[in-house]
Length: 106
Image (cartoon, rainbow, N blue to C red; front, side):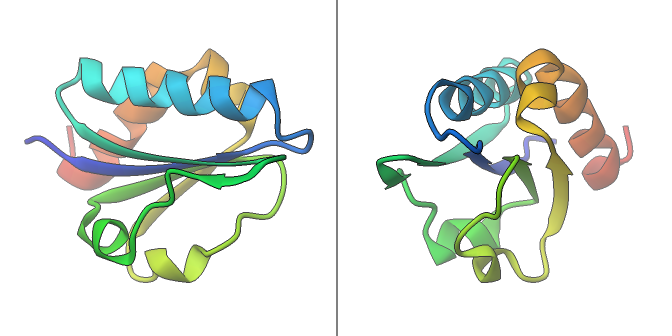
C-alpha cells in the first residue's frame, strides 16, 4: 500500500537540522514509494505549508521536532509519530518503517 505521509520538521535553531531532517524523511518515504508532503518550520518561518486538505488526507503524520510545531490542529484525527530532529536525520528509514507498521501493519 502506498501511503500519504505528512512530514513537519522544526529544530531549536531552525537552520540546517530542520532541513536535513525533512529531506532525510522525504527521501526515505519516496524510496519506499510513498507520497510525502513536507513542511519546514525554521528561522525564516513556515515553508511549503501542508494544507488542511493534504493534512487530512495523510495516512500518517511524522513530526520531527525539538520545539513546538505551529498548526498542529490540521492533523486532528490522524496517526501522529513524533521524533526528535537528530533521530529523523540518522534513522529516517526506521521511522518510515514504523509508520508503515502503524498504518498497514507490515
